[in-house]
Amino acid sequence: MTKDGEEAGPQADTPPPESVIQTDYQVGQDNIEGHLGPWGFSVHNPVFLISATCIIAFVVFTLALPTIAGDLFSGLFSGVTKGFDWFFIAAADIFVIMCLVLVVSPYGKIRLGGANAVPDFGYVSWFSMLFAAGMGIGLMFYGVSEPLSHFGSSSGGIAAGADGVRTDWAPLGAAATQEEAIRLGMAATIFHWALHPWAIYAVVGLSLALFSYNKGLPLTIRSAFYPIFGERVWGWPGHLIDILAVFATLFGLATSLGLGAVQANAGFNKLFGMPINETSQIILIIGITAIALYSVVRGLEAGVKRMSEINMVLAFALLMFVLFAGPTLLLLTDMGDFLLAYVQYLPALSNPVGREDVNFMQGWTAFYWAWWISWSPFVGMFIARVSRGRTVREFLISVLLIPSLVCVVWMSIFGGEAISQLVRESYGAVRDADLPLQLFAMLDALPLAQVTSFVGIVLVIVFFVTSSDSGSLVIDTITSGGKVDAPIPQRVFWCVFEAIIAIVLLMSAGGLASLQSMVISTGLPFTVLLLLMCVATWKGLASEPR
Image (cartoon, rainbow, N blue to C red; front, side):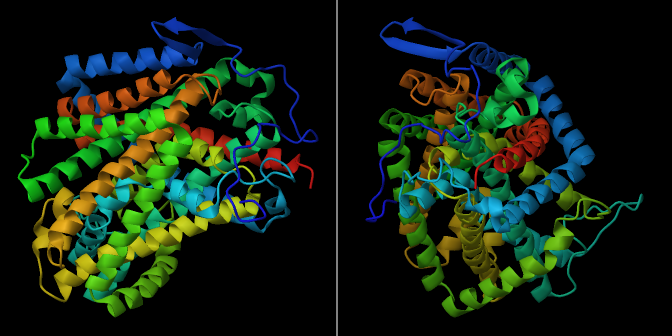
């Protein structure tokens, strides 16, 4: 925001000369350029070619051999979650610690873009884009179901098989009383949606912003590894990093689109009688993607920015409705208690070793961290694109703490209302509903259910549109060698492929389980890269003038 309070326009990509990295690399120097009919293209060789070829081969394999593909995906999910659950949890802890240390360190004064840089967007637009791109459909899909699930499993106590391994899904050691089961269930939910996922996004976003705006490198994932690889980052080490980022982003977005289609299908069935089947979900995926394509063509200012602002208004309106239509004072009081419970249980929930709650640790936490990490290339790059002009401290507080508090509020009100209906009003419809329908079942017990359910469906759709739009923009930037103004048809190409992957995995190879398996498989190697990125970021900040 400028000194007079207005939003600043985009600035020239000119880093401060005192901190720029001297390199001979030029953005787009390895690109293949030309025209295909009336459309121009400019794609990186070999990142675009390898990424596109592998994705097409993956789609063909999954369609041609769905049974083998489904078994393979299932094996990947089991092997990675059981063998590397500790690694995901420990890595996420490192990301949180690094962000908090940077907030209070002298590095917090460093401004992204140089000492005289001015933010491109005002706070309202900035926060809207951060939140809409970073969480999206997950809040709608899990906002009611996850608190109920953890509350139910915590209430059910501990169960173990003949080998002594626990078979229950309760977090930690379950709970002795109903009230403590509510607190533990909400603490586990907030754990999955607050500091840790936003720290993952913050690490990537900060690193990319630093090396692009301050060091003068292209805005692409490989640039963040320059302090480690040096000039080799423009060769095959960098190619592999960017290709892996493309895979992680595509499968992360495809998983979200699959979740969104399933939930939207359930909502349309409830309101309008739309059949719940594969055909309906394919139609919804195509329809949601068509809206995303419109936003892609409109660009960052008119597309993502406006959709994000609309989304935040609708989300805030629905949140306030549930708060005031439900037991307002109780929900507000419980919110504070849930936040305290989160702080109380945080050390145990974030402990990566010696855990007995294996199902919760592997099936919930490890999956979530892999999902957030698979989203981190596109969310981090998108956050970097809209965060020039912020100080490191301002960036981290805004990206880490403010969205975490919003997630606490969201989960406390939606989850708290659902649990209140079950426990205090003996309304079991929410608990008994299928997972995609639980949000709508909760709204059924409140006034204006038809209206609020329709708003919920719109939010599911618009949340994905903003994620898909920003994701397509980021993948296109990566596969065009760091160009931020590559031809629009390239963004359209990647947006369409997100839909194709979601349809293929959802319908041909095991449904949502296959989507989750691919997220896990791409999240594992990218976790290693994020840990290296932390080292590179620290080195980059240390070399900045202060």
